[in-house]
Amino acid sequence: MGPLTDTIAAPSTAVSGGALAVVRVSGADAVAVVERLLTPGGRRLSGLRTWSAMRAVLTEPATGVIIDDAVVTLFRAPRSYTGEDVVEVSCHGGRATVEGVLGALLCAGARAAEPGEFTYRAYRNGKMDLTAAESVADQIAALTGVAARAAADSRLGALREALADVRESLVAALAETEADISFPDEAPDMDAGAVEHHISAAAASLADLIASARSGALLGRGARVVLTGPPNAGKSSLFNALAGCTRAIVSPHPGTTRDLIECVLDLEGYPLTLVDTAGLRDTDVEVERLGVELAVAAAASADVIVRLHDAADSSDDVCRATDVGPTLHVISRCDLTDPDTLRRRAARLPDGALRVSSATGDGLAELQRAIVERLGGSNRPAETATLTRERHRAEAAAALGACQRALTAVSSGQEPDLVAVDLHDALSALDRLGGAGVTEEVLDRIFAEFCVGK
Ligand SMILES: Nc1nc2c(ncn2[C@@H]2O[C@H](COP(=O)(O)OP(=O)(O)OP(=O)(O)O)[C@@H](O)[C@H]2O)c(=O)[nH]1
Ligand SMILES: [Mg+2]
Image (cartoon, rainbow, N blue to C red; front, side, top):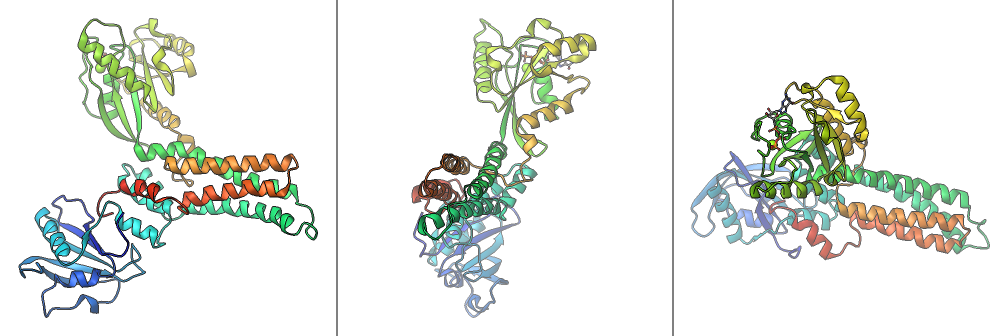
């Protein structure tokens, strides 16, 4: 990331030909840079009150040629997104206009911002902690309402508050141990019960947060739900029924689907990619064999496998090698068989197997519910603070590990200074979660995920 001292500029809206676009400028010279684009003799940007806007005709500084008729909004430091002077230029959204405005700003002394550099500056200038900065990227990438809400909650402090509670418990435990270390003669002996109580409270909250990490991660990247089963079991029909449109070819000939077919769905707020696959069987037909290989690989990397057993073929009431992992067993084409037979067959399969019919729609809602449950539905994101990234989970796990070591130390009657070492380790992991002491390398990796202009 570049130095914090120069003035940067970039379009903050996608180059889409929309009605409007925003080009953002941030840095000590932001006002001076934008003023070089204003027509001489007009209203001065430097005279504008902070958090207010004015209309401005923008021109090329070198030639005076008019670029656009725009609105500029001024945010004076430190009350701005980055904590620096920020000017947002709202111009017309055509690609040539946006490029013209950006080119003129660069001519006038700004530097092109790197990806995520505005948010990086906000973080470095203390406008937000690292989890809040990360949630900006999560919010922009959010595919569903629940994902967007989880990101907004995180940025507005849900995670910060949860972590602050954990920190408070650890500090209370530490105060007990350190009083004993610093004033061994004056302070009463460490109250092991109180220390255990505080550490246990911190450990329980950390465990809850870590439990949220799976659904949090799935919210961020989207879950992969893969339909597998023998040929003709009705996978493509079920795929189309869940997608709500005809994407996959359905035919009575076994071996119809070969390629992986994907569609993105919003299932109760979870963004997920549903994948239809080739029917699993041994075959000499090379193209079909390649399809089966793709299906096996897709199942191996699935977050949930929906494994179809054909109602019309009871010979398939077995678990196969590909059914490993988070598998939901489903009897498909149920309208073809009587309910008693289906019940008996379902009882032989793991978890009593769901029964669906794509033809009648029976069982589809139950299947959707079961998929959401498998994705962590009982631990609904956005109702509690959610860890959305592996970095968060790893630091929370490090803090929890240190808490557990501290608890063992207390219960085995160790000296307070040994307990304190573990508590300090737990606090350091919490601090790193919020961004304290994080290396530039880690920061570069985090902000490299952002787009230019964010
Ligand atoms: N009665 C009934 N027929 C179904 C149902 N689902 C699928 N079928 C029929 O079963 C046949 C196979 O359906 P597909 O969806 O193509 O099956 P598939 O598992 O994708 O088959 P492959 O791609 O060959 O592996 C077609 O003739 C469908 O119309 C169902 O719920 N009820
Ligand atoms: Mg198919």
